[in-house]
Image 1: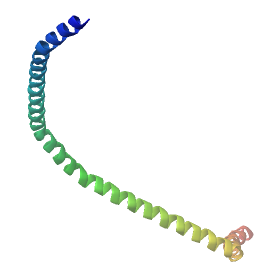
Image 2: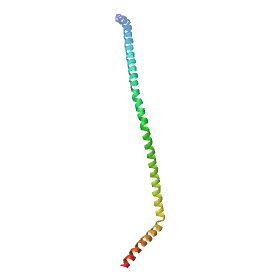
Image 3: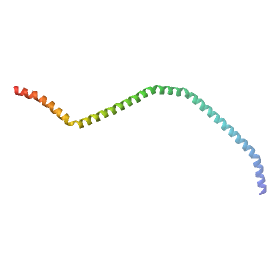
Image 4: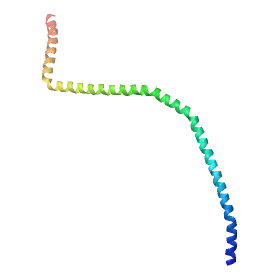
Length: 123
């Protein structure tokens, strides 16, 4: 059993440096590939820079009409609020003065009926 352990020790003393060197080589390859990936990503981002500039200029062109639409929407909201307020006031006025409106309408209808009745009597 001791001989087996001694043999394994000798083998491991010889293999560990070789395995360490292989691990370092793989690590170097991995770092080189990671560096190439970073360079590729950098080149891709540089190629996207004109596209991003075009998008920014398009956004600036679109912003002015959007601002106009927002202003128009606010104006429409204000008009709707004022219209609603005016209709409410008109309904309130009509409710408060329904008797005077009724009298006024009857007077108008009576005034219009009078010339017709005179015309009917003349015939």
